[in-house]
Amino acid sequence: AQYGATPEGVIALKTMSAAICSAAEKINELCSTLDTEVDDKKNLLGPHADGIEKVIENIEAEMKKAAEPVGSISGILETLAEGYQEEIDRAGPGSDSGK
Image (cartoon, rainbow, N blue to C red; front, side, top):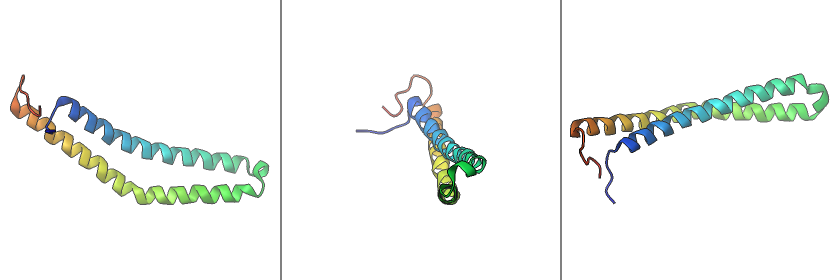
């Protein structure tokens, strides 16, 4: 199979780039929300509250470690999309670039 630049490919790469960043942001938001909920309900959770807080802290620490790779992957996908778009633009309208 031959690979090449297509408008659909550009859209797919940009979508994947945004999705990766969005997923990481969502995980961070959910950890923050869960942390707040645990703090608010410590009395109800009893001895389990500390364990849950430790799990949240571990997730947050891992997400901090993952921030750079996530950004890097997102950037690579964006760069690829830009390169594909430039190739499409150079080929001009009606071209079969990438097909």
